[in-house]
Length: 241
Ligand SMILES: Nc1nc2c(ncn2[C@@H]2O[C@H](COP(=O)(O)OP(=O)(O)O)[C@@H](O)[C@H]2O)c(=O)[nH]1
Ligand SMILES: [Mg+2]
Image (tube, rainbow, N blue to C red):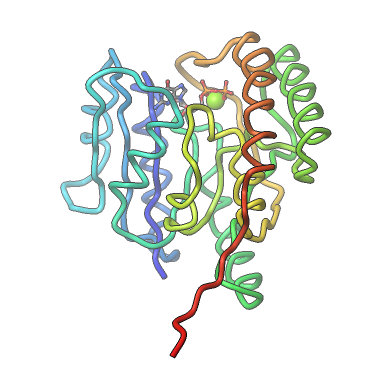
């Protein structure tokens, strides 16, 4: 199985080029066949910078929303556009480190022996963000883990490797990107966790404030809890002769 990298990006003109160059450096030795950048209606030249950063070949595909639809919708659009069976996601701002890709593929290869339905999710070992961001994220993660019992320390880490069809089978809602391991687990997908690096943002600005992280997170949590209780889990069906 080969992977498509999906990069949701909103106003990441300064970060996308250097990140794509780093990603290119990983392609030679990993089973990655395609990169899809989803420009979520950026008002800067994110898409143009992405195009310039990549040599003129078909491995990079850039799709664009007419206006901003949010990180979750951008993720979904990119996954729909992807041509490969595996999806590798990361942030477009360069805070996730492409040097960690190999680790995710290694764990995937080992754990896959127990079944194909698997997600490998990164957990940031040391977050390189402001104190306020780290604190709000810790509270949000603590409340989420307490309510959902998903055993995930850091659901906000975008570095993840999973099967395209497993994601597309989930009920979709805005902000699902913060709940992917919990949603996958409830639908019968095994969750493997891997510690990964985190780097400071070198350029551009964070798109989320305290409000998005805490209050919106709590609001979503109520909905996700309900959704998980209504999940039926994996269904086996066979023809009766
Ligand atoms: N497509 C899309 N991506 C977004 C949006 N908001 C944030 N992102 C992307 O999601 C990633 C994480 O956002 P960021 O602002 O760095 O969040 P932080 O790292 O938690 O401060 C980055 O790649 C952003 O470009 C959005 O509205 N649409
Ligand atoms: Mg970031």
